[in-house]
Length: 440
Image 1 (cartoon, one colour):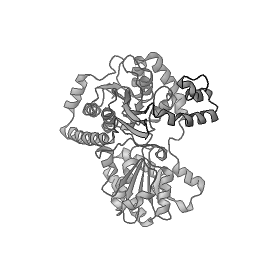
Image 2 (cartoon, rainbow, N blue to C red):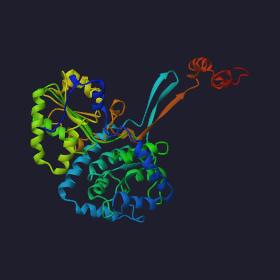
Image 3 (cartoon, rainbow, N blue to C red):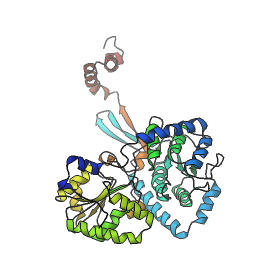
Image 4 (cartoon, helix red, strand yellow):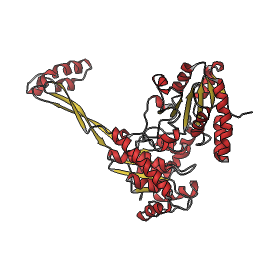
């Protein structure tokens, strides 16, 4: 018997349906209590605390006087990597750079709002940012590419990368090379809550920056929440989550492959197949069991945990409209549409970090080399948040200019509104007093 959970929406009450929509990281209160002393230690003791936590949490041979990557470290990392991985990373970097360059808005625009009245916006890069690259369940150079390249494209004044140290006290070779490809030369050995604190307050080595972005553990997310009034922490990026929505025309093998894609991230991930076709669901479940033979024990264990509980498995809907409604309620990070006509579902799918259409638009392709960013809103935030982009590294200013001839057409209306709201100084500022009169 398969260990894959099957959830029939037609038989679930409201509470059971809500359980399916709940993420594994819904409550971070326990972590927030634990990160508070870590934050305070970094704030007061700087590099010494970073080294101490690196040894304790990352089990790394790291010291306070060697927290920054050196030019020699970058050269050694590039030399150590096989040409195959370097070529793949360069391939991905070029497409990520091209996609995000296309996102860039014009520097400034102005619209004529009336005679003698101009209003518009100007876009400027933020002064500094830290891109966080996790290491908990492996090395993720793709995260370095996805977070650092948009920052460089946006023109951020200072871009740094923070990442947990390796056991030997170094930095993952591929992550260092990804930083070089992105155009980032400042990389620091610190992870988790201590990295957020270092970037928020600055240490002897790690600079204080204006913003920190990137996915990570509950420790990282909890520290971001704690320090949100000190440093801009950007959009949330918690454990991986995906939905594959499929109709009767879907390929069971391809559907199974894409369902396992995000489930293997870890036991706290979420991964659902949503369909109205029970026969397809049975075939997908059978394919999953055969595909485990091509995976190692650790990743298979993660997938079984995710797909066997309320954070994953197969969701059976009454019809595809109900399937789309469940997807919208869930608002997944990744959404894969498996159908011979995937475009037919696009108008019905309102909430997802990304929508990947058809059997050839594999999540793995999008994660690494397609170009769009793979740092996406999780935890249901896709209802109101967007994927990481150049806009996370830019700020906008309103620009306005009113001529002497344009002013008389605006001032009376502004004065009426100011008086209605009880703001006397506002009203006086657009009264006859402005023109040198003795009375408003």
